[in-house]
Image 1 (cartoon, each protein chain N blue to C red):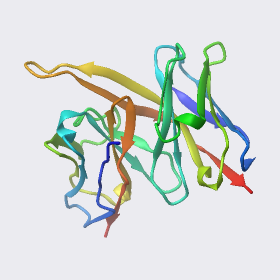
Image 2 (image 1 turned 120 degrees about the vertical axis):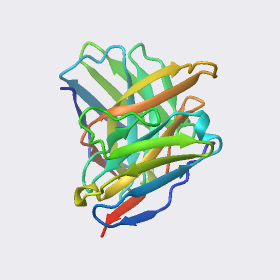
Image 3 (image 1 turned 180 degrees about the horizontal axis):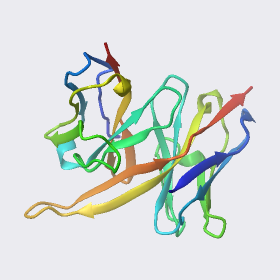
Length: 106
Length: 129
């Protein structure tokens, strides 16, 4: 079974850059996706195919993936970005999620 | 705009079968993969499986023995059945549309992808003893 590991929590000051990592064996050889989930809401796709943003997702969200680590970067973090973030990969016809990272905007 | 709505009993007795339906509006169910994802309260996301409009399925290996998915293209609906439920199956259940494909970068091996771009609001299912 494939595992994706995320830090449980990340803190950032408003206006600063937040980075959330997702680690997995040879993750760079797979496509990664990222979802944002605000409290009480459904997940929202914010990054797919490592670095593409769906329509309507702000440019401050970006992604990268190389080696064993995928990274979600939020530039100029806003209070509304406070949420849980999940990485996701596809391997052996199975979806794998990371455990999620709670982003706190202090 | 595509909209997904989960429906089904909010309370299921232990050892019985959980049955949910996802209804699609604003688009066609054809030519897409459709997934179920669940989330216990306060915990992370768990993928249950996916179904294509032809009926082809992939299930999470950890749930495969208890899961059945089906699709009704005439009704623009797809369904989930999870049998022999226990308290551990108590969760919010989401349905979602999947995007899949394979990309072959120049000079590199092919990479497959699957991500979920439209999600329902979720429905809470509680398993009672």
